Length: 89
Image (cartoon, rainbow, N blue to C red; front, top):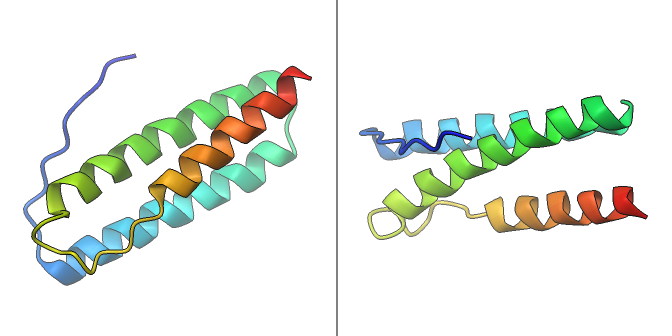
C-alpha cells in the first residue's frame, strides 16, 4: 500500500471539523463492516485503517500546536485489531 504524508495548514476550528468528520467516517465504516461478508469486511477495514492513518498524521502534526485537540485514534486502532483477531477464530 502506498503511504502518503498529509500536510494540512488549517486553523483550529477547521482542524476539529476535519477530525470529527474522519471519526464519523470510521464509525460509519465499522457499522457497514458488521453487516458484510468476510471479504467485503476486510476491504472496509482496510479503508478504516487508511482513514485512521490519516487521523494519526493530523494529530501528530498538531500535537504541540493544539494540545486541546481530542486524540481518539489509538482507540480506533485497538478496535480494528480486536475485530481482526475475532475473525481469525
